[in-house]
Length: 239
Image (cartoon, rainbow, N blue to C red; front, side, top):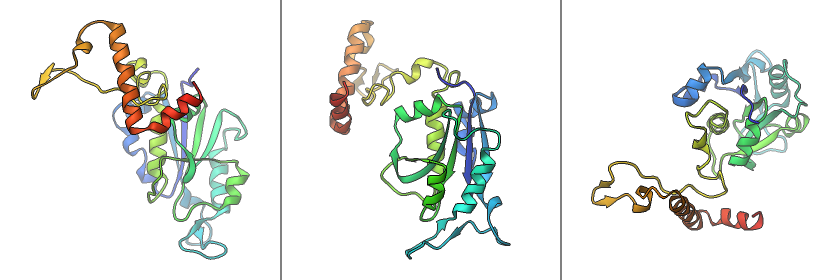
């Protein structure tokens, strides 16, 4: 059963970026209704020295800077004050391009937990020692680079929260979406039935639920085959 009061704790150098898009529309309503909650920790508050330093040069040389393990550790300790970090109902996540790809399956797994602590990486990344200490789960939102983990954290939170009971107006809304059954979602149509000389497929207006279901399944497979054949390969391996 999905958890009804999910908590997101975000560690970031840019707390002003939150809630950002998470405070809008459906997710914002759910936040105000306490279906989920958001706590933001400013990583700079745990910096060292008079300048609250949070990073330093990479050991062994190389470009950029690396987030310090002592600073990250203090921030995670603060985030876990009222919880047991060893509890299987909590996940400590480092958002990084080298992580496991975020999938609908992972989002559902996290939605069933009490909450997650999300570390928004910056610069060249995070010292491996603190990642190992806290057994952080590393997650990526795609094979591309962005300037920090904040957008990735918002994407992950969005994908998790929308699966919580009471967030979407119709709980069936998540059932037919892309990836819910391992396939991309079928094409959608609405009124008017004829627009710009193009008609809504007749089967969708037929009232025959079996034919509609078969059409949707067929179109999902066609789209998946053309755009994400890797997903079909996974289905064949795990029918």
